[in-house]
Amino acid sequence: MRTVSVDLHTHTVHSDGTTTPSQNAALAAAAGLSGLALTDHDTTAGWDEAAAACARHGLDFVPGIELSAEEGEHSVHLLGYWVDAEDPALLAECERLRDERATRADRILALLEGLGVHVDADAVRAHAAGAPIGRPHIAAAMVDAGIVGDVSAAFDRYLSDDGPAWVPKHALSPDDGVRLIAAAGGAAVIAHPGTAADRTAATTALVARLAGVGLAGVEADHAGHGPATAAYWRGVAVDHDLLVTGASDFHGERKDVRLGASTTPTDVVSALRARAGRAAAPVAAGRGERW
Ligand code: AMP
Ligand code: FE
Ligand code: FE
Ligand code: ZN
Image (cartoon, protein in one colour):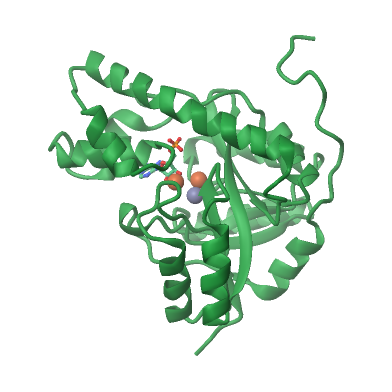
């Protein structure tokens, strides 16, 4: 039976997933969903294929993107829905993020080398298969080489934000990320706020701040959140008049979660769409300068 719900956060081979956009659409249809979002990191490259595949399956397609921001040396992920893929500022930021991934991967491999752990750069590139390199690609190469037993162990021991091989991406603030998404006509949602369990207080304060900048929603229902964590973030969303979304954050074989594991009801998707483009203030000029 088809439910009226949408998986609002899925990845493909265009970033660090292992499935194609068409496969995601087929999985969404098989799971009985009514719609599907594509939210690859830093790129909208999968949108056209996903839109066509969703149309074939009678699914509503929600175009999305996942942008990385930095808050005090920790990454914060922002989902942007219905952004204009041609928006110059958004395009520039995506290009910057993708370029930076290449040099960042080299720096991560150098840090690992310094720890006595050799990971072959070509093996990492083979996992990325042309997509911008992310830590999951490095983790996969480490599993292949027998350095760790699985991807989680690679993150736990080396690659996590607190790990010895952590290299921050760059300093787009979450505030500027929300403004960028809104200015590109999109609705911004903070992704998986509860996966950094040790930073609950800081992330709660961040959500309060971003609500004033134009944040539209909180991804409270996420495969990485247990029931109590999901309930907590639902409460935070309600406190700030933000929408509550749910999504699997599907990455194909790279994560042990099935597409459709968490979803968002279509009335919430409609409410989210109504908030798209509702910017609080334009992106400040001179971003990154010191005054
Ligand atoms: P990056 O974009 O290179 O900073 O890598 C971030 C990505 O790594 C996230 O989007 C997830 O796909 C993945 N990731 C982060 N933490 C973990 C973890 N503990 N276990 C498995 N995958 C993770
Ligand atoms: Fe990812
Ligand atoms: Fe994420
Ligand atoms: Zn994601």
